[in-house]
Length: 484
Length: 93
Image (cartoon, rainbow over all chains, first blue to last red):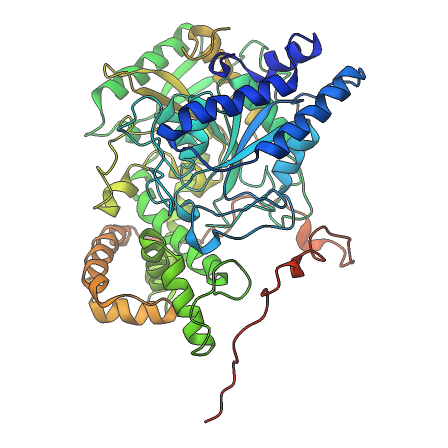
């Protein structure tokens, strides 16, 4: 059985008709992992025994004719910065290599309550800091479309696992594009919901005002289903939005009415890969033939987004990562020379290069004398970026951009120059700064057969419209990775 | 602004990080380049612009009732033996 060609909704209907057993599917998932993951390296931890045990229990419930839930028996991989009780959460870091959480993240728990089976924890850039999954303390993940290239990051393991058919669905987290960019590089669907939609309880914090959990899937329908299951208020997350969750799945097939798509001139920059540009322009034409109105819009502060992001994210990270001091979590080094020495030795040994670099930058931006010049200024420019979007949404209700300026780059290509790596997030970080929902869907391939991603952005809490518009694009042309 | 190796040392101390002598030069160069990039924000006049700390305002926890709620995990947290045990903080002079 090849899971590359099957979607979650189809799988659940096969279970319902008793055409397949959950145990068979979970076994074949691990067979595929055994076959492919030696080359791709998407997983840090596998939950083989636990998943098979859950599969057997699910099969007996199906045999007893218990009703199936929307994700019954669906194999799901989760990024290794989300807690699953009694399974290590490493965050791709030596610091947490042996950390075993005593509770499960709300988002993961909600998927499990809907019947999903967690098969493993996926590789990531250490503490989600990176755009290529090369910053993992353990190993780099490779792009299933071309093993010499990166899968994107920081949720590269999750994206690669779905693209390679080693999981049906995966969860990632997106602080500056860490779901949408790898989705684009790996040719799958990836979405970051509105800030506050999905609980962050049980997600290891990187930059708390930007982080959101979201799904990787092969189709928009599955993405809508997973989101619908995960979204909603959670009293364990103080930034959880108290906003009703509509049925995202129900509205998918309704005809699109009055869709006005804005194309921001600032997102079609010099230096953009010409094949990426051509594929995105094709997508715009496809929407035009579907009857959507296309309008050029301006988001004038876009050029300042990377600078704003790297000040805010690193400042928040320097504060969030202060907790890794050898006392409460994971690693401890140098306990003999007193408390201060233990802090420093633990942090020197536990953190990798990029994490240290970002902690230093964030500490610098927050330090006495520089707070106003860097951090406060960034928070003000964040307001300008948000206002750009608010103005644009008076004219249009969807914004369309490329997800990334280039297709997947080569392993090692950007590791020596952190700034060039940061600039690869240029189109995705504005959504995080402004809290808007964004989705990346495949929109074609380059002549070298590398996937290209199309990003669609909607106003706060407009996930229904966003998913409907993305679904219509898929219906009109297909993504080429699901035989429906 | 250029970040010197002394700046790197100072900030590392604030962040409780130890930086190898061999890393200092490279870090100073990389951070200088990043800071140079973020200083492009200085071209904007933001004197009258309010800062944005959080983008979504419809949260309700700030005003929730302060009541003890049962919670998973807290009783499990002590399972790992070395947890919360730290070296001596106060030493004799």
